[in-house]
Image (cartoon, rainbow, N blue to C red; front, side, top):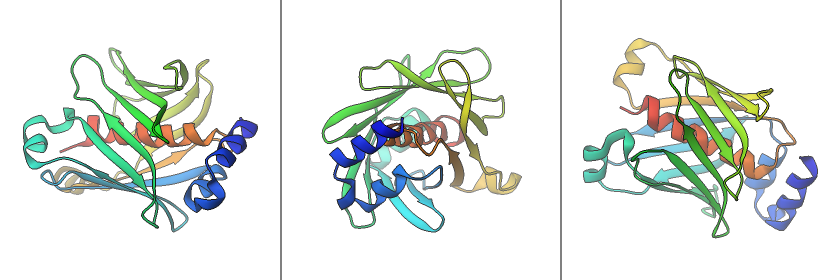
Length: 205
């Protein structure tokens, strides 16, 4: 996957987008969430003290109050220079749940929640909606294993537990994402998109 990652980074002009260029070479990022319940969620993606992207939910109070964690959203992934790098779109949840990752006006990945009885599973699909990676959770919804489609573990998403009171009464969450350094940068962004979807589904208040 290293060749495809480098090829895409070059095509995207990552030399002119430092945040995307850094992500190409990273194996761990942290996603911090802040939400108000009225103004929507905000996320920062960073690594070792360096900000990569900011994401902010685009919506209004009526949507937040009436649809809660099932609401659709539009988020722009913006670097610290204000440059728009990618877009996350979640349609309103009916029978299934998904998030689309857009770059350069095109869908490059789709994250889909799979129907399961107990533990949650998300498929991370390519631009043609073909499953490429998967995330398998646990009953607690705090830890997810990033896997290939043959169920080999290659990374994880782990929610930091901050104590019962903070978990119950605050609107902030933090996640650590680990993935192979040579994973295609589009799928690194897709794993970040999956983390956002996990936050909405299981930890939205």
